[in-house]
Image (tube, rainbow over all chains, first blue to last red; front, top):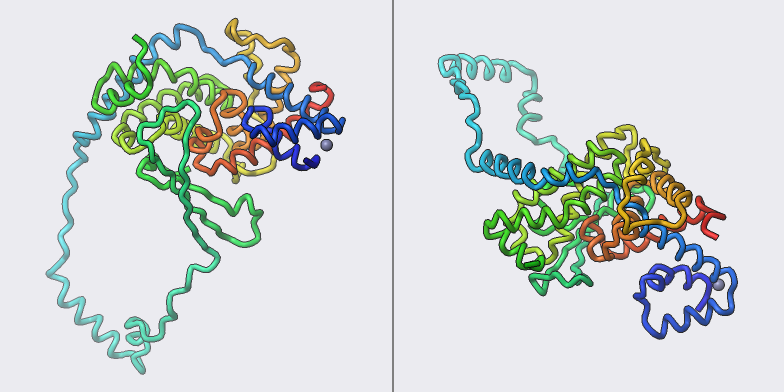
Length: 191
Length: 188
Ligand SMILES: [Zn+2]
């Protein structure tokens, strides 16, 4: 294993997700390379400290009332969704039919009076350019099967579909990659 | 007495209010903690916590087809947190912006309120780490907080962030490398 691979496998090594073979290679490299030993040591200390950061806690008085508050809010919102609040009655505007015929007549006169009927031509779409293609946008789909360690899978074949949207040239690759889970769970609005 | 999550989720979907209350009880601290670490103050963390569970309640039907409760819940929380973060930092256009963000750092204040099970040996390092986390751009910060601080696995983080696991891995890699660089000698 090379130093670069050690960097690549660092996260998996520390979380114990490396295969036996890879772990052996990894540790063989460490035995021979002081730089990587130091890297692993620092990363381990970082991860341990991160994991041990104190949990923000507003205190028991906050926690004790929270379930009730949430439950009430949820019910209220659910109720307002089932029975949508009556929106103020809007008076439907009548189309002014009485004016329709005189209006149509004057418009006709207007167009007929134009030389070469150029306006009519343009309005009927004869000279319109065709719709531009959505250049710069390219999309592909990939389907992933995933499972968690905590094993709380209800449906065994849960699939997450990702749509990769590549757009706007000139941006860094990281910015080009917009990934979305597009299954029906996505009703909460876009990120 | 202690029902497993699977049963609670089933009960919740089928309209059991007590199951919902129990889910709130079990996950409220995780959601609050995540939001607080991202937004840095109680009012916003409270808003995220309440809104996340209210939305969970609204979207419970969708849980029928979803495999992971935790990922689903975290996704709602993450979305709302990032929305709030955006509102609070309007001048920052991109969430991937490399510009280091500084939020009012109130994490230090919360240090005193830490539970006995989460002692850290080196308080000074803890404070420095909290400050360094705040310097990370939002998506790297979110990834680091979810995975390294809160301890969710990569699959859960991927669902929460709406990205492939490879992206979680690379965000984590970059975030940790920056942290190591900023903390320098302190980690030696
Ligand atoms: Zn090396």
